[in-house]
Image (cartoon, rainbow, N blue to C red; front, side, top):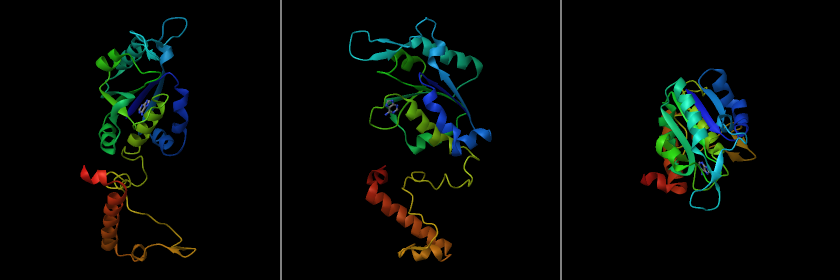
Length: 225
Ligand code: ADE
């Protein structure tokens, strides 16, 4: 998979890809990440990428021309399955959406800033608008990173144990059951005995039961869906 991220502050995006699972995913060739500084696509001397709103009102708007130039340049080199815009008024990111996007080959992610982008960008270039939650961030970069992380860890071969992404919370519409590791007894706080019994069918049954209970207690809305 190839991900091109367009931003006015591309440096903000880089460090999460330099550690742990994301770094290994890049090193092993499962994903390529390319950062694009919108200011590189500006023709005027002031490197201006934003301007006042027509009709008045507080806040600057990202101009269409540099975004057009950047996206058009990328599209001239390869086909893209999606051009995603990170914005608080987009569709809320859910596991199912991450699963869908992880099946794509090439995607562009545009990070909004200031008040957002000129509506014509959304009308003519964007195929999907994604929010990471009902709150407003200072830019789309953190949202883009969250989206990349959620997607990249699903790519085949990225996680050591192929099944582990499938047993994540939300993959089956439920929260994950409680998990434990050694020691089985810490200061008298014991691991449920069944988990150390070796009775795999019973353990699976217990896990399912716990997942349903946890979901009922913490996220009953998931069961309604
Ligand atoms: N940009 C600003 N706020 C955002 C949010 N909640 N989700 C995605 N992009 C954003």
